[in-house]
Amino acid sequence: MDNGETIRVLVVDGHQTFAELLGHALAGQPDLRWVGHARTGQEALSLAAELTPDVILLDPELSDADGIAIAELIRVRQPDSRVVILTASEEQALVRRATAAGFAGFLSKNGALGDVLNALRTAHVGGMTVSTDILARLLRSTSPVSVPRASGLTAREDEVLQLMAAGLDARAVARRLGISVHTCRGYQKAVLAKLGAHSQLEAVAIANRRGLVRPDPR
Image (cartoon, rainbow, N blue to C red; front, side):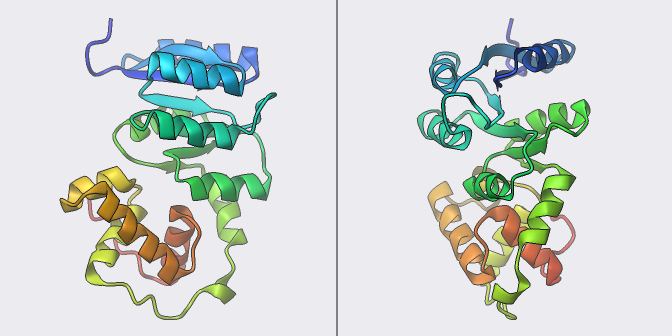
């Protein structure tokens, strides 16, 4: 029975064996609970609406649909459900689309199981997790030529950037700064525009390279 602290997880993955193994792993965690498994995009939409999970762990390579598009649709329909992408794909286009979408996590299936479990916990509290190999590919794909020398960030935009770099999403940043989520997203868009980035991760990568990120403000 849910004690109010258990994180309810829906797994979306076309591979039955892999999903069942994840289910067994979740069953061994006192704070995580498997609530369902969807094999296709349509099943994912249906179960997400029916179960309203706290976190959805989704492989974007689905047999019947574009997984990233399904994840974005779920997020619109169930804004309280956090989405973590888990993929074996190394396609750069997928990396850029998923990071630009601003999901709560983007993990490689080549990583450790413990990293996946911790990413689910991080997502539930408003944070974001990215596998190191995926982040490395994103950094390599970021062109320094398009980045202006001066950031031109206002004091508030700089605050938002620092919290973005700490892995907080728009809702968590808004709570920290005492502003609305709508206002926070406006600041984030301004930060991305001034840094010449297309996603939060890309903005943080650029800011790190230029020495604009200070030690974690948390």
